[in-house]
Length: 335
Image: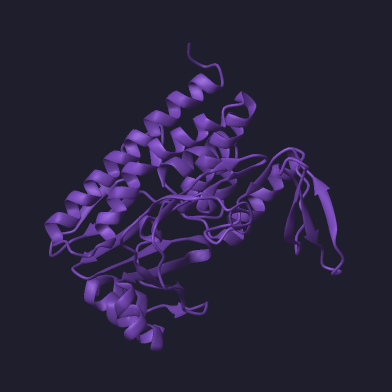
């Protein structure tokens, strides 16, 4: 989303993403007979959006981090946290590919390890808020689909959501989101049929376009998980991304959140203000969290879905403004 694109631009990485990923100029929402089109580039200074695959994005991020001095250890598993005599986290124990064990000391151990974060479990990070609704998801990558190369398309039909996202190498990610109960009782038994059937239900246009393409990956599914906020820091540890704050993937905002929280945490460490990190993260996240909760309830009609998405867009715009103000203050660009 816009916040993630702006982050890549400020880090000097957007050109590398744009070189191999289609520019998204429009988002098309389907609520019924008449689609609603939103121009992603109304603000010429901001330009288009991008949806790179992780196979493209991750190496770009790794290369940039290495150039900045980071040391990466791949195929390495963290198996324990090291604590000092006061119980403060002071490092990790890890298992490299050869199966041996080693440890490394750290002034701050950051868990950026996802919804089921090992670090969060080891420090018993409390959940401060948990959502009431969730969505199950089924998705696949299709090559050669008769779908627009420069449009996000999202469709909302009572009881389900679907869409298509153009990405790297001429592929489209096609997906559906549905109630977890429907997923467990029907869809999970045959995810291929469930994807095709649900996509046809929510958008015959997207379904027809997807049928012209070829699957280039297994069909994957996610049974759903309630959104949640965890306490994002404690003695010697901190959490970013889904490890600290998770909302339903239907928001299409996960990587944007991860980029945002990584930089907010860095600013907080420099300023010695981890309390401020938690407050700002929660203030920016809560409106988006509440709106996606409404969407995940699946109790809306087309008109109400449009209202929720309009509110979601307004919350993202407010988040962008707040982040620009924070960055100006944190980096001495404003008084």
